[in-house]
Length: 340
Ligand SMILES: Cc1cc2nc3c(=O)[nH]c(=O)nc-3n(C[C@H](O)[C@H](O)[C@H](O)COP(=O)(O)O)c2cc1C
Image 1: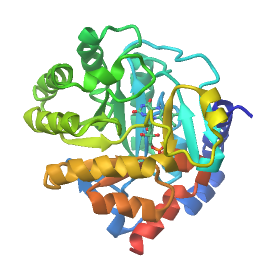
Image 2: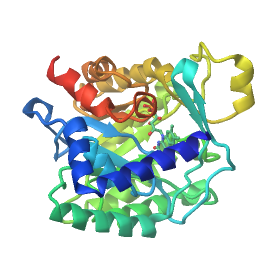
Image 3: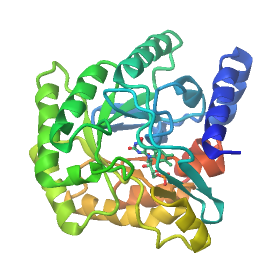
Image 4: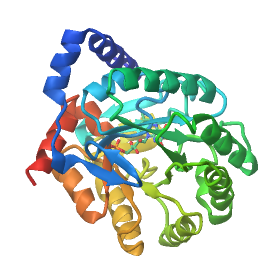
């Protein structure tokens, strides 16, 4: 079956199951894990465990109830854009099981910031009543496909403002390969305009929210140095390292003809682990391990997660690993982290 259809079928079934109290209880018993060594305070937020779900899985904040039952410490919704958009033509999500990888060119399909704001507000109200508010929700924000790069800062500030009261932290996404020209916004001047416009609003609030930047694993060292300097200048709370890669050289088992036939898109999963770890290691060491980093890319096991934490990550996120390993992945990683 088409992988995108499977995604929605599986998540809808899980969400429906979690609406039945006895089944929800069984799912929570099986997948949730609580232990004081897993608890962590990062950029002023208290995480019940350091294992999160990466952006793009629950783009529209539809499945937070189900995802909280699976034991995630945090979920990053989005990427959210000001206007709803349908994304790229299907098929746009491809499984490469021999390499434990995915290639996607979704193109920021999402319901738009106002619909998502409402959904998040409803979730927050409901979660407060059933006391599952311990799930931290990050808001990953982006620009619409047809917004020119010079106007991108307006899209980012609009999304930030709209979601301010309903998201716990924010991530600026300028690193997805599937919106034409987006990654050019990782250049110093363009990025400074976006980040400083957001921080202007943020620092005017009574209690500013943590603002992070998500970067691509394909940046050069000098680009990374610019970003590190900028992170300090605009007082970022952290970085998410990394997004998917446009490189294909780490694919070993999938026949080249299949890879070519799939075409453009971001590669995630096992072939991204080393590359994202290299960038993580560089940024962590250059910032003297003081800047909180969310490690993303190629995590399937507790050892993969430990590796990122050793390199300098404070928190980690799974995505492709969740697809291949199934809903027990958080429990498995948390257990491994307790027994480290
Ligand atoms: C189908 C798909 C859609 C994604 N959509 C987004 C997105 O909208 N915004 C974003 O910042 N990252 C997005 N990502 C990137 C993931 O959040 C994650 O950073 C990346 O897949 C690397 O982690 P992994 O190797 O564990 O999958 C997406 C990834 C996949 C596979």
